[in-house]
Image (tube, rainbow, N blue to C red; front, side, top):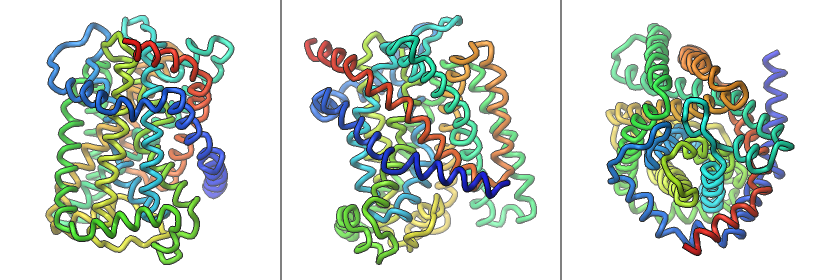
Length: 460
């Protein structure tokens, strides 16, 4: 039975992340970029003035909302996660260094895609019975495309609920337990036969923490993420930049391998990665897995922002993709490629490859700090995706289903801590791709609305 599930998932995954998906993801990003006159580039400086300025804005949001910065931190909490560490390592191992180049390309177009998602989410949002702002793909499909497309919104919500348990929770908890166990075993702090009990305890603790935060509502989630996300991002980047500085003489050769490997991967990987499409596929899919541009999920958090200007909140989407992929994913790639650790092209790899880049530079002691970084990344992702799942279940069944969902979602942490999740990672990747289909269709159909909103903002 397990083999049948594996085979079916493999076939669906190959289709979802095959040539049609690449055309749709890149095509919609290019379409929106053209229609908005490449707003991600012409407004790049303004984007950072608007977003960075919010770092120092000390104000409370209105009832039922969060500050714009809390909204972007909640969205970044979900995107800045294991995809930045394990996802980049996997893309390089299977697609070669050239996968990083295609990750950049998908991010440059994805900045406009996410800008559009966030803008539409704020423009078409509505208030629920508790007075909270709710929005996202299911709402801009329903309110933007009309009742006859509500079935598309329902499909997105169902896929969203199925995805959050794997992508947002179980796999993230599994990453936390793996990081903690590695650090504890390296220093002989626990015997190997007690790993299961330690994992169970970790799972219970995470379950309690997640339940306490999610049940506190959007404001509590916002307060936690606005403190956790900047800390973990800066902490990780400092460690990564240290590795790059130590191996600064390797940087020119690394960038050469990235550009050469994008179009001729076999020349860089010794034939282990033979085709440009394999490099492109891994770069684009892992980039989207990390920054979520095209999935629409991040816009769910932005819809709760205390703002009256959809376009101004949309700039946070550009900032988000740039921070996640261009900065954090690139530093991860440079840690792996500059440190000189053996990659093993053509074979699957994950967080252990990234960690080896740090330990090869700093020594085994750094495994403690990488464990902390991984735990922060993964925990923040659990919170962000918990909000996404709550909004999807609320769209389908009303807000009365929110608390039962939160409790079930929190309890999945125990499963993630104690069960082998090899297949679940692959299934989560498949559902991620399936979620993008209704969202990309909606973005394409709402292109005219985006043009109108952008033109109005440009006149101002």
